[in-house]
Image (tube, rainbow, N blue to C red):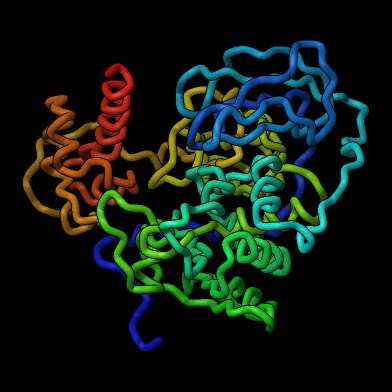
Amino acid sequence: MGRKLRFRHGVHPPELKDLTASVPIRRMPFPTEIVLPLSQHTGKPSRAIVRPGDWVERGDKVGEADGFISVPVHASAAGTVEEVGLWPHPNGFYSPAVRIAVAPFSAQVPRSRIIPDWEGLSREQLVEAVKQAGVVGLGGAAFPTHVKLSPPKDAPIDTILINGAECEPYLTTDHRTMVEYPERMHRGLRIMMRCLGVDRAMIGIEKNKPDAIEAIRATLPHDLDVTVHRLTVKYPQGYEKMLIKAILGREVPSGKLPMHVGVVVHNVASVATIAEVFETGLPLIERIMTVTGNGVRQPSNLIVPVGTKTRDLIDACGGFSDDAREVVFGGPMMGTAVASLDAPVLKGTTGVVVLTDADVKPQKSYPCIRCGHCLDSCPVFLNPQVLGQLALSERYDEMEAHNLADCMLCGCCGYTCPSNIPLPQLFQLAKVALRRQQTAA
């Protein structure tokens, strides 16, 4: 491929991955309590099917899918259900959740399960197995994977793109997954190709991860059309529309999805998880994530039970440093600062970054100087300056007319703004306000 694999606009924030890029994945000890929010994915939350006093084993369902765009939630540790009630959610709200007191002397060995032979299953059976395992996108959006694996008949898919860019600063979850579990990733890719009935897959990895590129290329299956592509290091390279543009040169139109240009995009961790489901018979009950930043004493890449509280996660990494200031779920560009250390890890939590006083940007904002930096950085060619003014005036309907729906909240505009205007936060609030208006109507 002669052309450079890149997209227009975007930014180049410091990578800040050195803290954990070469740190091997390890398993954290089980905490004394697990909290499983029923809202852990895009779409309709799960419906609780357990009551206080119930005993559950690892992998048992505690929440049932409540619609097509919904997945079950499973117990990530054996123990007794303490409560089904409201609990602090990483999004800042209180959300229905299942609290489990982890059995202190349990070996945490899951009950025996039938491991399906995926090669003997039909496409429909494979997709249903993925759904029942509660698999969602592990790159952050947490969109139910089975929905992506069953596109409508009028949107034929010719290519699977695997997102190994991991362009968010600090995070090394996908990097370590590719280095340490390349065969598992290829096995999951094979299952996905079977589900979608496609013959071609392409894996995009930013060129700042040479060890990951080498590991994936060294284990490429010889009987499949799978290629690895070294991507230009730029943020937000990992956003699916940018990835499609960089690798395939296809433009996803405004208001459309990747499937409308014949592509399905999956994160490397999601692919590896699907392989694990068919290797062990276990659903998605734990995930690999990065705990990093100058505010934590032992930056690590961990296998973490879903539902682990933030305070237990930080304790497993040596605790906070003396100058720790802010805890962010996800990376500093698209992540969310958590208000409570009781907020639990979700399926889609890629990492936790602990920032220090020196890392936190001053909160004071100044008037817009019309410099145009936000326009030059926006990868989807919006006008953040106009959208910001409309958001400050709460003219949300007009924002919709200016294509607010295309904004992916990547943070490029806020990163480049010399006036420190919190544009991504304003746009996020506007999206919430518009959804509430539409729901009320």
